[in-house]
Image (cartoon, rainbow, N blue to C red; front, side, top):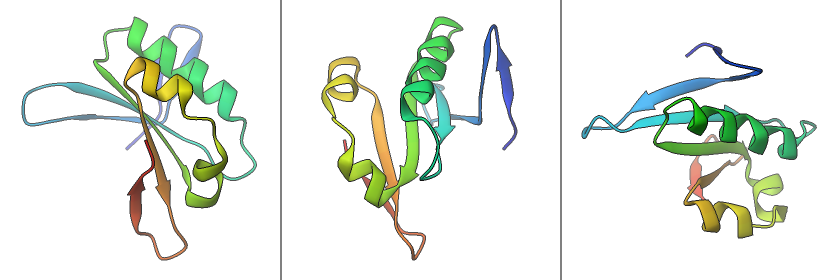
Length: 89
């Protein structure tokens, strides 16, 4: 997975599901700015991605207000200290 330039920003990666749906992936560490990540995902959708996923630590993911994610149908993914993936929203 590598960074992908989209207009004024970049996303960390992309995936395609079995139906050909393009998914933008933005990864934020515990110290990163989540609001900036939301902007990056908005830009990705403007550039033709069908879905948007924000990945961060499970601790940080549980503290994020999920309203924006639910409104736009985005996914919020948390990764715990053992590397287990949790869909928070």
